[in-house]
Amino acid sequence: MKSASSLYVGRFAPSPSGPLHAGSLVAAMASYLDARAHQGQWLLRIEDIDEARTVTGAAQDIEAALHTLGMRWDGSVLVQSQRKQHYRDACDKLGSHVYACGCSRKEIADSRLGVATDGAAIYPGTCRNGLAPGKIARALRLRVPDQGREGEEIAFEDRWLGRQNQHLASEAGDFVLKRADGFWAYQLAVVVDDAEQGVTHIVRGADLLDSTARQIYLQRLLGYPMPSYLHVPLVRHTDGEKLSKQNGAQELDLTRPLDELHKAAEFLGLKTREITTATEVAAFWELATSAWQYRLEQLQTQA
Ligand code: GLU
Image (cartoon, rainbow, N blue to C red):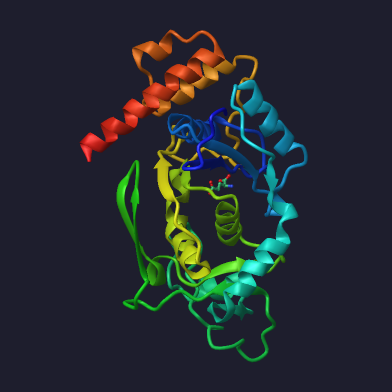
């Protein structure tokens, strides 16, 4: 993108567990349009930190798909699997906020504290004050403030959804920073990378809304600035389930990029009369950028 402004740095951060699909295109489009509308930079980061889920060749396929769809990123692509030292350093910096945990998934589920909003079982705190006897360290967890303590409730303004808040203790619990399989967790990696890349605006799918409070808490502990957030609605199967690479979301038809762009724009509510006249990819992006600006203004007046 030309005329990059230092005031706005956005990003698209796909996990290479499969090709770009209709749902991830919507997230990519929203973040790309928001960066264009602000004349900002748009970065691409490959989130392959969960190496067990990484599919060989998927990152290249995603890059090629973005290219075919006319989306150009700034600078070089950051690849999480090459940045483990940065995550280790950040984890060290967190000091006594981090503790080793020896509990198995089953033990945590059996405690029946319920599940966090993202479906993970809430940790009962068994190893909070040291590994229970006979246990060996499996994972590293971050201690969140106890219910009612300062910093336990995280509130933020979402540019699409409005005011959001989450109680960390009851809705998330002490969360994993380093997994039992040895991989760094998404929550830590995403916070470190967004800060080190200078990301100012995060635009992504609403499936990650529940993670935002944990990420803001980590930013505070690490002394990072807080970016602004916008979560776009999720594309769902007709049965209401989220479209994902795991449940066989249909691949995009990249022989017809303009059709795919029009479908994603329609989903985002950008289907203005002008956009329908776009018969070329470059013209589409011009018109879609204005439509995005208009859409955000509409959302603001509704709020
Ligand atoms: N890698 C995540 C995903 O593909 C996105 C992370 C983010 O945008 O914060 O769902």
